[in-house]
Image (cartoon, rainbow, N blue to C red):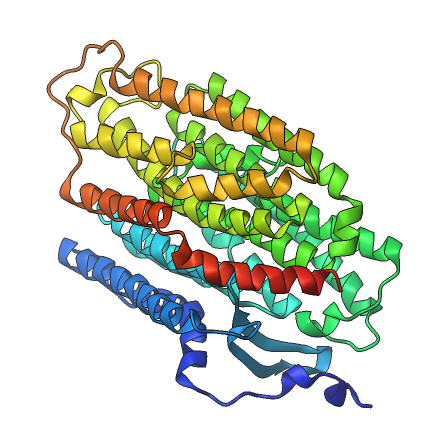
Length: 506
């Protein structure tokens, strides 16, 4: 049997509209970024045209995502919109794309958040063209990871995110942006090295040289090698998640990045870590992952507890939002360690819910910091008297973050607790304690910012502007809709989770 005969995935599929939609969600942002390079930006009118073009590009990707979602709901196979093109045939890699109920909701979340991020950047004046170019390139990398069914393609899209995010933090962030950006890049490159090492070990252990995920799924690997590969994948994904003790890069970046960049960072970029653990560790190496699940559980509960305790001691509002996201990602890690279908369903739903909630928290935190003139929570107070609408949206976001019934995160957190409890009873109770501590922190933060003693401020602070109000209202609508009607996503998620877990168990 020749190499080409052994790799059926290199056979090109017919070009159809649904297939092109998935590729479009990946490559339209990149084409938009290239197009932006030709826009002159010397005058305000020219800069406005560049901004409008970036908004239109991101909105087009969202339209593709919504259209795909309506077609995806009736999908009965393992992957929808699957596309296989001949690419690097000599090394056994193909342009293999596809989405299921685990990746499609996250891909849709990505398209929503990038639209919000571009809209939230509309007041940017200096280097606007460069900023939107980087943001659109970042979207290509994120969407490519969610759609990749080839390990080499997965890795290349993963790496594509590093430079745009580094430059977005370093050039458009706060006073300590360079330190945060270099820390992000160093940690991300180290994690990517582990990811590449795991992929190469898997590649060279295969009797047929291929990077195709479906083909390598059936590979028989010695237990020790499988455990090593699982550890390498897990650490690479846990760094991005971010799990304790790999979280400091994320907290620093969250505190220093501009609001739209922080929105993408906390809303979708860290979800790639959770997605990787579910897709690869659980879906491809479930037996090996089970052997390290004890250590994973410890990391999960420490992540939940540490983030809650750190949030309690945190005075920086923007860094506080980072710890909220970190706590939710610890719950995702606990769900993955349990490998229970109910918990995994809850983990996917929580990642989507947390993406929306984190985006709203980041935008409201940026608005509050701008008006208060400080990131210190202790220096704020009485903001509700000046920002009535801002206070309302922050309180809604805080309630969603702590899992208030009727809002997006509640169902996900509840399913994780219920699903993980039978196999991880003590860990589940500890995680619940962390959730309760975080809830107390968010309530205390609301009191300090909006209803505490009012410091002396010159003049009257303005409330949310029209664009800020639009972004907040749109995100709140999604949060409420997902909290009231979780079945919008759950039916598709459940089918794919059951399929993934059955695949992972062989």
